[in-house]
Length: 435
Length: 130
Image 1 (cartoon, rainbow over the protein chains, first blue to last red):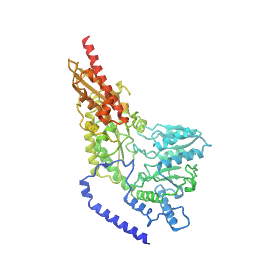
Image 2: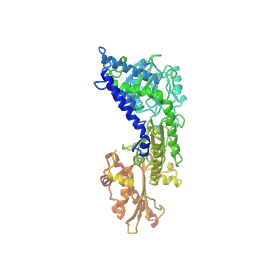
Image 3: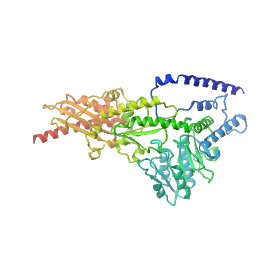
């Protein structure tokens, strides 16, 4: 009982902090904290409610036991907490808790799902289908399978970023065993029609894996109706901690996987390793909050995102990347033509955003996602991803609008391509000396 | 990536930004790079009858290091003879701006730009002579 009292005490202190924080909200808005964080698609801060819960699973007065310890209360308490979190994760996606396998994050989930299924079902066939705009955790895993003797078809998306169902259907072969398509794209935020793809794959008895790292907790997922067989999730994209994720593995019809990590046979043999109970209660709490608050939060984020887009779209030669409607609430990916992305990020040092164009290698590769959409080079090199979230305010949006407009204009005044555009020169007609 | 103070200074206060009349006989223009590669530099020089660079202007589409390299270049070429300007090496620019290895190509582009501008000027002189 002693540790419960201590825990309550910590809770009271945190609550009083929260009250004080709310009182000073107005003040905080007047003195805005810089830099402004607008990279929620990269990661999110942990929600204080989640952090509070996690802390109670670490210290001697908390439930620090090993959930695999069967012989004492420390282990039983930790196991109860892990199973509660499993229910919370399952609840968010309308699945059975027995279908949830803990992993270290979405990258591991993707590896386990794709390699695990491919190797288990390799006697049935050796062909997989995915899309060119998938996350590297999927693409690089597929490349590895190619080295292992599998064949992979990489679909081209439509210019709006969405996978064309007919294109997918015509890529299916007799030996296709798995289709892997992400739910929400990490760069451009477009939402794929998972329900429709699931119908297509289930009818042909092909497994369907979905990378839901960017969608779990942000877009409704109902696995009772969506015919998805494997679904990767992450905690740190939705205000949980880094280093924890989950893989949904369907039981009916049953999906089998070959384990990628061997050890003590944890997680029904699919993923060995001592369960990080503090991380697991973190993902559980984050997913619980997401389920309760998703609808309201999406409404708020959509309003803020539209405010940002409305503030930027009237500049000349500004393009939205990815479908305007089928898009997650917090993402806005914009190309500012004739301005190079890295220099723009440098100009926007008071806001934390990311650029598809990473001019850090000698090859100067622009975003492979934008290239797959068929964007011209100068647009692919000129993109900025703004991703907003739970702690973004309208004041921050207005500040960002002003700063971006000012800096885009400044850099355009420096840009020979902008001069040429203004003089009516077609950049495609110019003979460039590639280097 | 951390930028050196000199890169930041040129990036935030670029020198000699502008455009000269390309049709003038005493102006040489060098345009190097490509949009596909993420950087395009345009350097223009105005040359006196004695073959001295009286003025230089640039515009650059590219990262901060590319902008800084071209800005620095315009400072360096002014007052130099064409001969001297062509002696500028990319390594000198990279050293002055403390460019990291992944950004050395920006200084290479600047060296290409001055060479292209000088040769454009010579081409123009030849055609006016004939």
